[in-house]
Length: 241
Image (tube, rainbow, N blue to C red):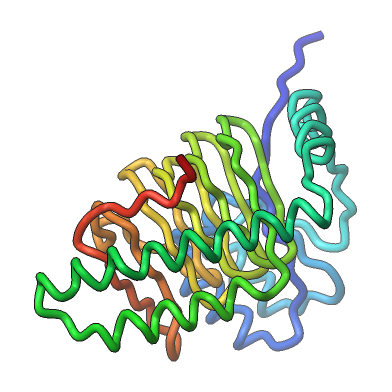
């Protein structure tokens, strides 16, 4: 007997409106063309015909098994064991706020030398500060190849993301070091510095790496359009010394 084991990417969705479903699949065809499309609930003949003609592989009302590798389970256990206490989280947040205050002075000097309006920076920092007052997870660990991190809320990662690793956040995402893996963010904004190896999907839209500068970038989705703004001309290092 010969066996093979496959890792399959699955898009699980339901169809409430044929037009909306077909428009969505057409818009993101390049993103999901190699996925297995799992339809939950009723599927009309029209939607089924579209999936066949578009070359998608699909299943309807099938429960797929899910699992994680031993390595992933061990890494998750390690993260949980190292999760800081409430007091430690408050200390980290306070330390972060102090670091942000110090960065304000550096950013003001850089913008003044570049003849950029300081008021724009102050508005940006104020908005960022308000975001960090929400439910925030702070991690200071390298995300190695094969690791998957799922965060419900905002994430501040003070380390790099290697190729083959992936991160998903339902809230905002800030990564202060180089990203070479896959990011999925459904928040209001991202702040990342990426290499050509990275795969960035923001609110369901894949971001073209060619649009990102070799520095910290702010990525926002405004009226269904991606807006990308370099935070500063030079690289910013938020790690504590």
